[in-house]
Image (tube, rainbow, N blue to C red):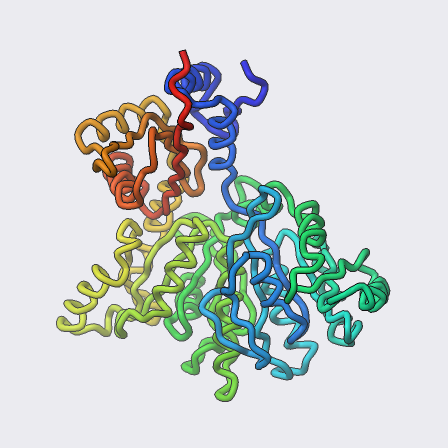
Length: 487
């Protein structure tokens, strides 16, 4: 057997005998064995390593992010505190995929510049596996840069030093001056023109681990499961944490965004110890609302990256907002188990409940599979339902389907509901396997391109057959090369 086989530890029920049968099937269907192994290995990797881009305002962080992801998506503007819908992006370099956290758009002089830099950098660095520290080479190292360096040393994460705005050979001497920061070699880059970014990204790939260094739950296997409470400001995240903790652990104030720092709490609930992370919005000042919303997004993303389960709090008394939907999308994209808690349920009249149910059907259809609890953080109503919902979501997140059972299911599905004919051809799913869990990740092997609508149909039927309640499902498809069947 090929030495590059899939281990029992990595793929559970795909043991030696099953692996051999699977590869024999792949060969019979005309697939290259190396391609099949690569597809399964890629799908089985799980969470992507996280790279944070940090630095003081206006050094070109967002321009660099756009350069790395290959499109103009991060907002670039001289005005600090520009509000963005997203702070995380997927990127790829030299065949390695990773997640990018953009910390651009910082507010200057909010709480004193050192505190401002620290608050934002800490959120991003905390969730990251490695950091790109961007410095404006034309200005040189400033006191603010020195403050970031102290944070980086304290965090102990691998750092790649990016000396930005080096537009030609004459400016490389400016970059060399940044050796003085003590972070190793400065990589001269022009994010605007692309100069030097390839060499810098090579260094990034060396710094990133093959898999995230953090263990799920923020602890060794067997430690407390980690729950992130997420939601837009003032939906009751701090109140919920205090209620489950049975004491006031977190400052609660009617002014939205009174929580400034994430608060990790070990809490016993339902006879089990859980690690809860409160991610309420930071202290919001009237003239700094845009910046505060950005802080909240950044810190929510950081908390979700470290969690196993995202409990999404939604204010049942208000219409489901675009911001609620963005938070839902963030949680789904992160691949975490999901529970939706509708807070302030005790305040609803019959008319509001009717319209809320219609909103849930239309606005949150993408997470119709998530367990739902209707609670009141203020009174404690139905809090006992939270733990079973979390346990259900975790069970779905960790579910594995044996390859033999999966292929029997796929065979029946393809026979009863074949893919639509397109251009005179009818692509077929030939076989598949589950490459990993947390969340469940499947790789399907097909005779031709499988349309997104049919992939969604397959996902829906997978859920009907095997459950997967409370978890996103990741499905990738590999198409057989056009070179005929192997004998």
